[in-house]
Image 1 (tube, one colour):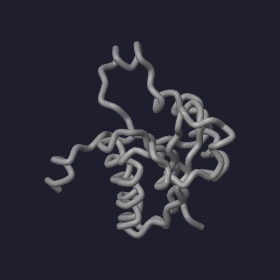
Image 2 (cartoon, rainbow, N blue to C red):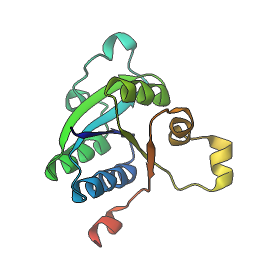
Image 3 (cartoon, rainbow, N blue to C red):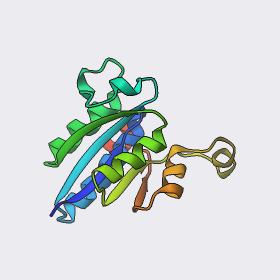
Image 4 (cartoon, rainbow, N blue to C red):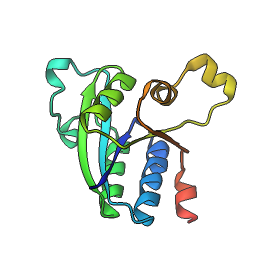
Amino acid sequence: MAYTVLVPVDTDTTRARGQVDYVETLVDNGTDVDVVVLHVFPEVQPAESAKIDLRGYAETPDSVAYAVDALESIGVDVEERAESGEPEDGILAVADDVDADDIAVGGRQRSPAGKLLFGSVAQSVILKSTRPVTSTKPKSDAESESE
């Protein structure tokens, strides 16, 4: 049975790179991994949100395509999902729906005061989830090329 990882991707490709790198470490360690790449669209009305083709939706960020392509290139089975509404609610609902073994959230590099003042979707998911959550570090193009 495969280990299911939910990878909620926002609009930042550096965070998506970190999330992909985390999944790649699982694959490199011999884990049979299935991945659900999720993007939560806050602007999509609920009646429109069911089964959106992420690649066909005009507002799909490049980070989503990056994550899907990168994961498929390392041989991971990828399911694409889209939801609408508050990001943390969508993430937690999809995690339950797919019975995720892990939620790999893309962390931001913020100061402790910045986290306290502005909050974070990743922080909210970590605090509210009943499932394991892995926070990944953003990774720039330069960091990716140096490996």
